[in-house]
Structures are given as structure tokens and as C-alpha cells.
Amino acid sequence: MTNQQRYYCFLIGLYSIATLAANTFTNLYLWQSTNNFQTVILYNMYLFLGVGFCGLAIGLFSKNIPSRISYIISSVLYCFQLILLTVLGSHVTDYLLIIGLCNGLAIGTQSTASHTIMQLLTSAYDRNKFLGTLTAITNGVPLLFVPLSVFVIGSTHSYTPIFTVAAGLFVLVCFLSLRLQLSETSTRTSLSRLWFVVRTTKQTHIYLKAKLLFGIQDGLFGSPLALLHCNLLVI
Image (cartoon, rainbow, N blue to C red; front, side, top):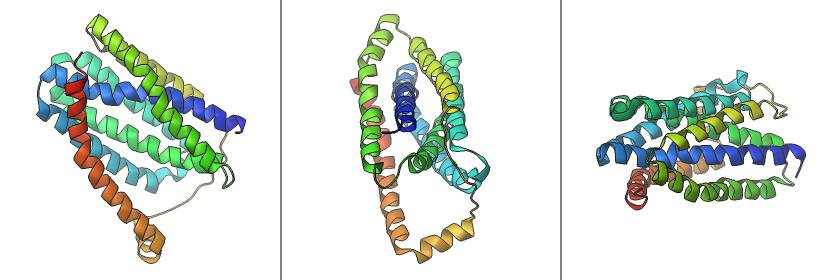
């Protein structure tokens, strides 16, 4: 792998650890704070709403926003979410919409940027290898963080240390993202052009249908899985 590919993998490793706290442990925190399944379900509904809206918005208006800046925006949104969770306490349910949308917008921003960065950093020759390495990092690194997180939360009886560390990692990602060397070109798109491509390109049409089905599956299982986490990870 090239130096920039290794650097991006390192960046993703830090980002993956931080998002563990911002995603999985947020569900657990909401459940233990409210003892109400409806709160967790509403939070995940707002989250998916933010992901969908942000994905479309970034795709249409990102021509003047470099991908590295998208990572910074995502990290800032996550930091704001973690700050809200830390300071709101028992009033967290009053701001559930804001917290869920912050998480969803952060996920949508990072997801769109990561696809662009992967295309810029790789070629057809090394893309599969790089993607495999990246997948292993995003799924493997957080596993090392889970036992430590559970131990800290159980010992302190507070989520504040974990949320604070995660926020610090997001701040670090903001600075590290600026060092990514990407050769991006400005592109313009529109809803009419997007619709034309979908209608006239068979492979794109098939791919979007598959993504739609995957999105429905993800939405149906997202909240139940979050509730399962809440029942299994009782700290």
C-alpha cells in the first residue's frame, strides 16, 4: 500500500473507535437513562432520517467541499452529539431529535466522503486489497475497544469518560484529515441529471434497487439490534 493509503487506514482506525462510543454506547446510554424502548427507537428513526437526507445533500452540493473537509464536518457533528449526551442528563429525551439527526448527518457525511476517498487513493489494481484492509480495520479495531469501554463504564458508573475520549479522538481526526493528499476535481450534478442516469443506465438501476432493499433491511433490523445491545450489554 502507498503511504497515503496507510495513513488513511490509521485515520479510519481512530475514527472507528470514536464512532463506537457515538453509536453503540449512545443506544445503551439512552436505554439506561430512560429505561424506555420508545426512546431508543425514536433515536434510531431520527438517525436514519439524517443519514438519508445527508447522503442526498452531500451528493448534490459537495462540488465545493473537499472530502477531507467532509470528515471534519462529520467529526464536529459527532462531537456536538457527545457533548449533548454528556451535559443534558435527564433532559436528553427533550433533545432526541437533535441528537439523532447529528448522528445521522455525521454518518451520511463520512460515508459519502469515504467512497470518494477510496476511489482517489486506489486504482483497479489495488482497490480490492485496500478495501479488504479497510474493512478489517473498521470491524476489528472497535472490538479491542469494547472490553475496555465496558470496564471503564462499569467502574465509574458513568459514560462521561468514554464520551470524552471519543470526542477527543474526533478532534484528533479533524486535524489528521487535513494532511490527506487528495487530487479532487470539481463536478456538478443535479436531480434531473441523476434521474436521467438512473433511468437510462441499467446497471445503475439494478444497483440502486439492491441498495433500496438493503436500506429497508437495515432500517428494519437497526432498532431491534440496538435494543438487543441494550439487553445484552447491561453495565
